[in-house]
Image (tube, rainbow, N blue to C red; front, side):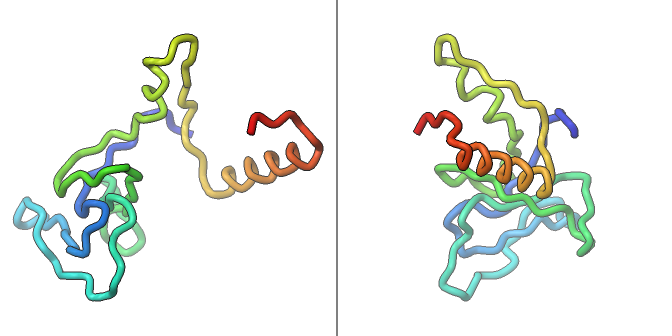
Length: 122
């Protein structure tokens, strides 16, 4: 499990129906098409640089944000390292990111804790 920051490049801002795409020949982000379905991108959408997914494109990335950014924005994924910095006596430590199997293992464990009557803070 890696602890290096994950950097994403945003191609499409949250709430957009425009499909922007990085064009390596142009060296810029271009408007690819308008999404005709009555849906919008639920989060910022882009890619992880220097990767190749099975479809031959860079690995897709969904970046959860409360407000949309804009195409071309580079986002380091460091929120969980800094979000408690201004709270006295609180800190957080990112130990890495897991895969889907690890996420489901953690969910099963948490459900077992709930079923066993472990202390709840909610």
